Image 1 (cartoon, rainbow, N blue to C red):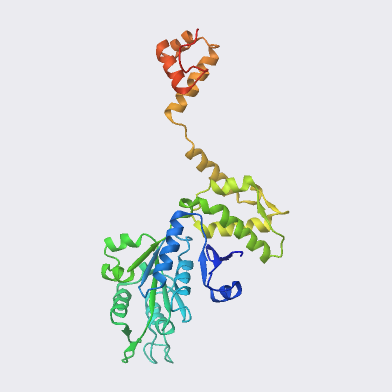
Image 2 (spheres, helix red, strand yellow):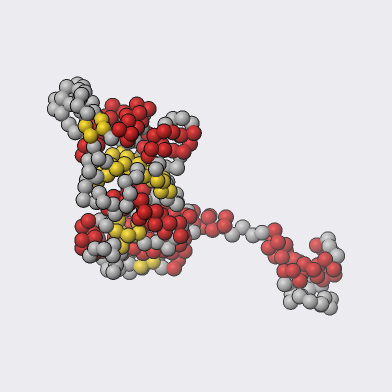
Length: 343
C-alpha cells in the first residue's frame, strides 16, 4: 500500500482502516527509517490513547503540526473537533477574545456574543501553537482553564464547563523562557504532562532520501507529471545539506525541483544554488583531515620528492630513519609493514 504525504511526514494508512477512509479520516501511521522518529511514533501511539495534555517541541519545520494531528486522529477524540490557534499571530487583546469568546458589549465593537476556540474545541482537541508567546495574563487564564476545566467569556458571568484536550506547540527555547520566568513554570508542567521532542532533519539524514522521493512523487502527480526521480548527484547534494528549515524546507525544495525538471530525473541543476553551495561547504567541513592523515600525505610527498631515498627523506622531515620507518609502517606507506626495506 502506497504512502501519502501529510504535513511534514511520510504517512501510511493505519492497518485498522482502508486507504480511502484513512485519507478521509486522517488516521495515519508515521513511516521513517530514523530510530529517533520511530521512538516519536511509538510515543504518539501511547499518548494518543490517553487524555493527557501534550507539549510538542521542535524547531520550525520539523512537523509539530503533523504530530498534533496524528495524536488527535489516533485518540478517542478523533470524531470531535480539531481546533488550532496561533498564539503569536494575534495581539493580546484579540488573542484572549479568540480563546475564550466574548459577550455582547464586552468591549467596543462587540455587537454580538461570540464563542471562542475553547468552546469550538469542546469534545475534541485544541492546539495552541507558539505557546511561549502568551502574555502573563493569558498564561494565568489558561492555567485556570486547565486546572478547573471551566472559564467565562470576556464580559460574561456564566461559567462554562468544557471537555478539551490541549496540545501545545513550541520551539525548544520555551525551556529557557521557563528558566527566565517569562513563562510560568506551573503552566509549563500542566502542558508538558507528556513531551514529544522532534529531531532536526539534519539529525535524521536517513529519512532524507525517502522524504525527497515521496515529495517528488506527490508534486509530480499534483501537476499532472509522470513520475520524477532523483539523480545520484542531486541526492548527494541533499544529503550534504543541513536544512535549517527542516522537513518543510525539503518539501519546498522538492516542489520547485519537480516543476523545474524537464525530464523524469531531478539533477543538481534543478536544486537551488544556495543548497548546492552550502552542501559543498558542509561536506568540506565534515571531511577535514586529521593530523595523522596530513602527516601521511606529507611523508608520501617527501618520499616522492626524494625518489624513495629514505635517508634523504628523513633528513628533510627532521626525524631519524628509524622514526621514518615506524611512521611508514603505521601509515602503510611504500609497502613497509614488517622489516625495514633497503635504501
